[in-house]
Image 1 (cartoon, rainbow, N blue to C red):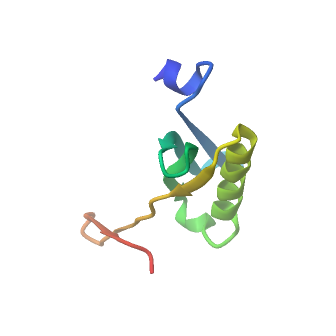
Image 2 (tube, rainbow, N blue to C red):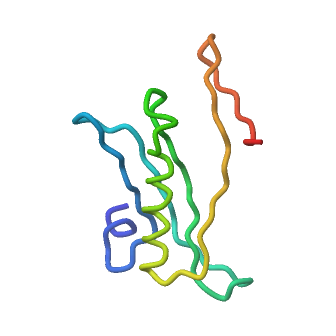
Length: 99
């Protein structure tokens, strides 16, 4: 992982959001190649914002920062697969596509 994330050509990266001296969110992404775009693109792999920090622009800031990284790298596209995961009162998880 050290080579793939921190070598001369990183294949993945992550950004974190801090508030009040602690981590409140992150976004991770990978770099892939598309034959349709004939070039490299960024795929947002995962994003999380702590519940008490949602609705305050943390997710937007993380997404915009990742997008700037995509542009800086000269990628032909940026995107991601999104799935909302919620925790039920019993502690199990329930995945659903955002609507």
